[in-house]
Image (cartoon, rainbow, N blue to C red):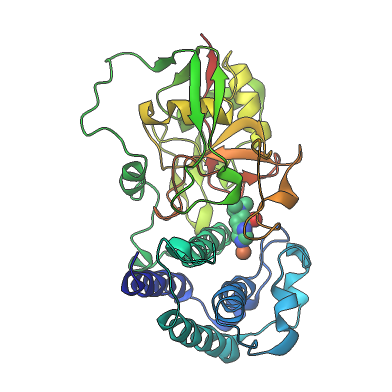
Length: 382
Ligand code: AVJ
Ligand code: FE
């Protein structure tokens, strides 16, 4: 990306961020809607503070605008449930801070060398700028998670035509689908041959540290569903087993309705199910006589899969480091989350910006969480 393209992409991301909160007043930005999500004012300040930390302080060598303020925007130091009580910036001060940081960012950008031969790995091929773009857009998705709980909220058109169902085409293109795909009719699963598969992101280009290094894994033959699990199939599972409904589903007579954003929209049985936890997804797969795919199986099969981009897809895998992992540029993005606490999701959701999604991208969340736009597809040994 050229400097002009970086500046343009940064401003597009910011327009999207501001468009998302445009319908809300300051009270709504400051309100704590859920203990598992930040108030929107925290996300906004954190987006700007992260930008100041990397693009102004680290790259530009400048002093922060508000002294020690940054510690209240540190995601590790400040768990989500206490973020509403922190002395963070609010209202007009918050908006000025976002704009002031951005002005300095563009000023610093003018003077840096971002080519492939840049000495600083943060600047090489514009890495740190891509990271900042991804970060802001990922926080847009977290903000959308919270906005599902705001009655009457409607996603503004200016936020990039985000709505369930609309973003999936865009996202599918990021997965490099072959232009014409021949999918045998009547087959609802694809068989993936056993063998060696390349997993992870290549050395060049932007990716997070947890996607590297690229390495080979041996997979036994398996079969994976061509499409994600539908609302209809999930409803059958609930009715047969008494399993919990997805988040935001409520019963209305014989039917289920989606109450996100205060609506009462009928559930379309043909659409992929979202807002299920890993525990629900795993239980569904077992009930169907199948299992969740591992994240490696998912990655090996991804260019054969339909229906990507409606919801993230839970995998059976714990969020672990790849062999030879090296934290870059900071431990707190990935390394502190490695272990058996978090489960990996792959793909992307309607709320995911195409710049964030890529075949090697690994998302993660706790297995009991369903505020994330998460669904599943099933697999089994071949
Ligand atoms: C990749 C979505 C799990 O929210 O913890 C945002 C993304 N990291 N700021 C998270 C992230 C730092 C991350 N997830
Ligand atoms: Fe963050």
